[in-house]
Length: 308
Length: 261
Image (tube, rainbow over all chains, first blue to last red; front, side, top):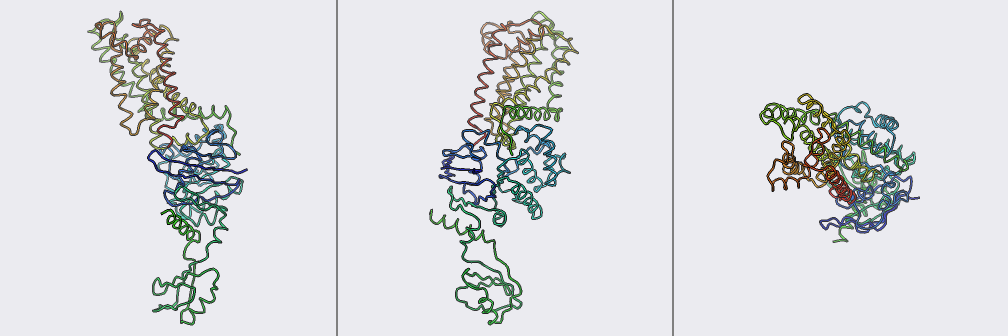
C-alpha cells in the first residue's frame, strides 16, 4: 500500500492564484521521499492539503488508503507534520506542548508523558522541557516541532523545511534521528532547500514547479541524468593563461583556482595531463556544487522557459 | 503504528483541550479570575453599600440584594465571552490552532473543548463574585437548580457567541468591538441595576427585546425568588440561542472559515 496517493489535485486560491494544476503523486510505504521546488512552486499548498490545513479545489489525497477529503479524522491520525514555521504556543512549556499534542490524537495522558520524555530526551531537549518555549533557540524550537509531530507515532512524517536556519551540527543530529525513524518503518516526506540533504537522505524525489510535478523518480535515476560535473581545482602556483582543452570548459576563479566542467564521458586523466603539460600542478580538487542542485536548477529553469 | 480513531480518541482529545484551557486560566489567574472580583467588589461597595442606602428598596428588596444577581451575571457574560475570544483568537494569531486542525479531532470536539474552558472560567468567576457578594448581603439561594442552569446556559450562549467573534477576528481590535459596543450596553441596560418594571411604557417594551434582561431576571429568581419575566420564556430563548449559535459555529468550523485556506 502507498503511504500517500495524490490524484489530479488542484488548488485555486480566492485571489485567483492557481497553486496546484492537477498534481499526481505516489509515495510508497517506508520511503524517504524528497519534495523539491522553488519558492512559490506549490510545495506548501500540497503539504497543506495533505495535512488538511488547506482545502483542495478538486482531486483526492489518500493517506494509507484513507481519503483526507472523505475520512479526515482517520487520515490525520496517520500523519505527523513538522511545519515550516514555528506554530506552538511560545508561552507553554515544551513538555506540555508535546503531551497536549498526544492528547489530540487520543494518546492517554500517562502514555503521552512517557513519550514526551522519551522524544524530548532523544532530541536533546529534556533539560529545557519545563522552561517557557519562547526561551528556546531556533534549533531547539525546530527539534520541539519534530518531537511534537512524532508523539502519536504517525506512519507518515512530513517535514516542511525542518532544518532551515539550523546550524550544521544540530542539523546532522536531526537527520540521524529522522533516519532512525525511517529505518523503523515511518514513511518520511521532506521538503528542503539544502539539496545535499535530499541527495544524501532520500530514496525517491519529486520536483514541483509552477503547480505541476516536473520530475518524479528515484534520486539515483535523477542523478544519472547529470552528464556534466564541475570540479574546483586548487593550483600550487598562480597562472596567467589557461590551456584550451577539447570538450572541457576551464574557468579561472582567482590566481590559483580553476573550475573545470567535464562531461561524464570524458576522462579526468586527460584534464590532468593537459594541465601538467601547461606547467600547472593541482594540489587539491573537490566537487563544485551538490550534483542534485545542478540538476534542480537546470530542470526548474527549463520548465520556466517552456512555460514562458 | 498510529492509533485508530475511536470515541476514546475524541474523549481524550476533548479532555486535553479542557485541561489546557483550565491550566491557562489558572496560570494567569491574576488576569482571568481576580480582576472581575475586584471590579464587582467595587460595584458592591459603591452602588450597593454607599449609593444603595439612599436608593432604598428595588423590586421589594434592599438595593444591595437586588444588584447581586445582575452583577454575577455581568461577570459570567463578560468572562465566558472574553475567555473564548482571547483564547481561540490567540491560538489563531499564534497559529497554534494548527495543532488542532491537523489532528483527528472533529470540529464539534474542538468547539466543545473551548466552550467548556470558557464555561469553567465563567462559573469560577461567578462563584468568586457570589462569595464576595455574600460578605455584603449574605448568601441567598431560592432555587439552586434554576440558579445553576441559568448560569450554565448563559455561559454556554456567550461562549458560543464569542467563538464566532474569534473565528471572524483578523486582529486583536476585532475581539474587543462586540464586548465594548454591544455586550456592555446590553448588560448594563439589562436590568442589572434596576427593575424593568420601573421603566415607562415604550422603554419597558424596548428593554424586553434585550435577551440579557431575561437571563438576569431568571438568575435573580434562582437566588432571590423574584423576576420581571416568565422563566419558561427565558429557558426557551437561551436554549434557542445555544442551538442556533452551535450550528453557526459548526458550519464555520467545518468550512474552515478564517482557519483553513
